Structures are given as structure tokens and as C-alpha cells.
Length: 114
Length: 110
Image 1 (tube, each protein chain N blue to C red):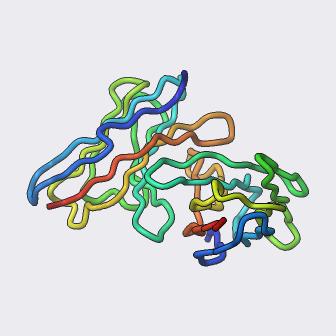
Image 2 (cartoon, one colour):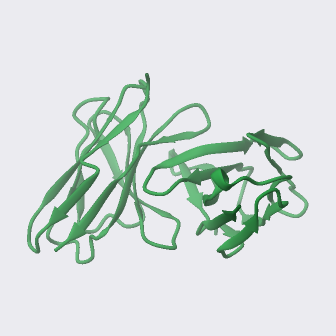
């Protein structure tokens, strides 16, 4: 079946450290891939997306590349800030059963300390 | 500003009560969704609606009901049949190749 697996958290980093959050997926067809971010007590915000193989999504210093050969979409940032502390969700979307089905990973909590 | 609003932000329910969560969007999107989020877990789909007066069950529809009488509105009712309703509920609408989310309603059963 279709699924998303992302690394378990929490991930704890010092400010200005390099961030990687791993995400791999299993899907039939050709999904689009997303990273959403959730700040405490809030809804989800789209961070970045990629719609086809080898696309790189980027936003606010975060990047992720759609790797079809390894079925991965790892999130990276070169220098994290305290304000990046949040929960990050990897997701894929497929048009299935007549609608756009969005499938989420379990989320990875990131805590950045000064 | 275009977006999705959910109300209330916090909701408390007594055992055996039905409660209704509001979701309104002014993005002119046809498709809308309700998700449930439990601590440490991803989002699970409760119901979705592709168009007015039509809706379909998602993965965890038992104990929930919805209506879609207007394009802008997609309210969710949590019925007394839902045995473990304490969770964070998120509404979303479908744009071009991405879903937009509301701020959520946190429901607690007393």
C-alpha cells in the first residue's frame, strides 16, 4: 500500500547546526511529495513540495529533493534557528478513488536550543 | 485574506454529547477534508467532500458525521458513538496540487 515513513524524533539541535530529517515513501503511481510544518497549537503549513522525480523544493532555507530511485524526500537545512522548532510532516498525495488522497508520516519533532 | 477558519479553538464535551466543529473557507475550493491528529501521530482522514451535497467516508469515519450544504462550509459533528474523541481536528481544502489547512480545534472529553 501507499505509506510514508519518517525518522522518529525528537531531534534536538543547537542553533546554526545542520538539519536532516529522513523521509521515505511507498506509492503506486507517481505521487507528489510535501513537507508540512506545524508550530505548537497551530494547523499545518506547507513548507515545500516537489511534483516529479529530481525536482527540488525549497523555502525559508529548507530543501528537499524528490529521489525516485531511493523513494526518498529528505528535508535539509544548513543552519537551523530557534524559530524552526516545530513538528515536521512528510506527506505524499495520489489521485486515488476519485479524490486527492494525502498520506502523512507520523511527524518529527525538532527542538532547537540557543 | 483568503484562508480557512475553524471554530472554536478549544471545545469541551461531556460524555454522551454530540458536538459540531465549524470549518469555513473563502478560497473557492471544491474539495474539503477533515482530519484527526493524535499525539505523536500523523493525520488520519475522517471525511472528505469533493463538491456541494456530496461527501465520502475516509479511513476513520465511525462516530462522525458531516454535511456540505454550501461550498464554503464543511462542519463536522462528533457524535456520542465516537468512543475516544479527544484529539486535535484539522480541516483542509484542496487547491492546485496542495491542501490548505485551518488552525485546528482541540476537543477534550470531560
